[in-house]
Image (cartoon, rainbow, N blue to C red):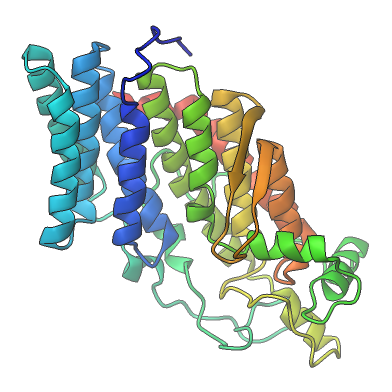
Length: 385
């Protein structure tokens, strides 16, 4: 990455400013499907990436970034006049800092044009909530086959991801992992025994520290990685264009990873641990946390952690300045991270200790996320043409 010229200590960081605007806007008008929220981020920040690369002049880049993200968010999540007014105010604040002139005017025009382009490209991409959660026929009950899980016994969700339009994947199954091991294999039996012992709501072997990890990373993946990505941005020495691109790449790859994850889940339809353990005779066994309503293999949380680790390592290095993080599913807990692998480690363990995934489903998920990320980091320039 290139190194920016030293700026005045009082200069506002426009990248972080609009990162925070995006966080607030999506939180205020969230989609019930996290892939749709990632698409919102991807559209806005891909538009900004395309816009700022046209000219590295500071006034142009700041105006282009703010306008591209603003116009994208207005098109996607400003569902009330009050919400649009908040975004308009944020844009006005940014533009007021930029001296009037040709660079500012060109930046506004380019940002607006790129937002229109990015929005148009994702029209009818299959990622609206009703499409993501489209009905799907559940296979007949059989050993190893997913069935609705307690307590709600809900129909499966997120099956529609696998038919959505990717950004860079040629097809949803491009990196589909091998089939899970046989139910009577040593690996599967060992994994299930681990979940039964450590993931039970009444476990006597899970420690408080393990319970804390499980509860902390029970939070959603998309919101859970907002803080790590912001920490990467805050401590990056890259140029404005590099840092804008980091946010775009992260979220483009997030969308495609979730498409690949759903493809694998609904190709294999592997039952969840709670179903397997109860089928083996432990009819009252209950996991620490409620099992999400989709198949076990691979773990979606783990695929998210895998791609995030790969992207952040490739673009910012394996370690980070220490940052602290909280979780809505573990009030009062604060974790500190210093390397991206630490988050992946906790995510893998958390899903086992929550009682909702086998360890192999987590490990394969990490590999799938990394596979998608490695490919798309190398292919990302296709989106900038």
